[in-house]
Image (tube, rainbow, N blue to C red; front, side):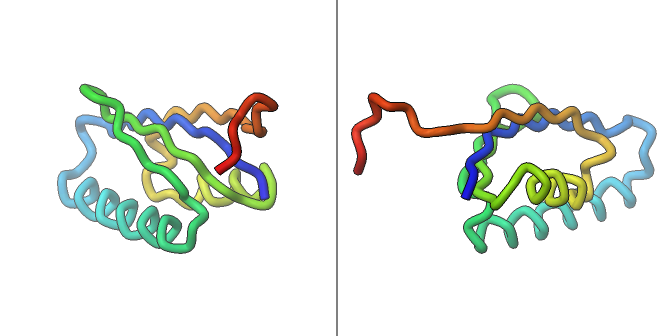
Length: 94
C-alpha cells in the first residue's frame, strides 16, 4: 500500500445551476464516504476558512489514486495537489 497526502481546493463556478450544484455535492459526499468506509480514504480534514481539505489516501499505486480522484463528482471544479508519503526513520512505531 502507498500513502498519499492530497490537498483539494474546490472552486465551483458561482453561475452553476443550484440544483446541479446540490446534486453534485450530494454525490461527492456519498462517494467520499464510501471510500472512507473501505479504508481507502483514511483521513479527511477541512482547512479552516476555505472550501478545501487535506486528505490521506491508502491505495496500491499513484494510478489507483488518480482514478479515484477523477471519480470525484467535484473533480472538474478542483485544484488538487498530491504528495507521496513514506515512513520517517525517526518515527516511533505504535
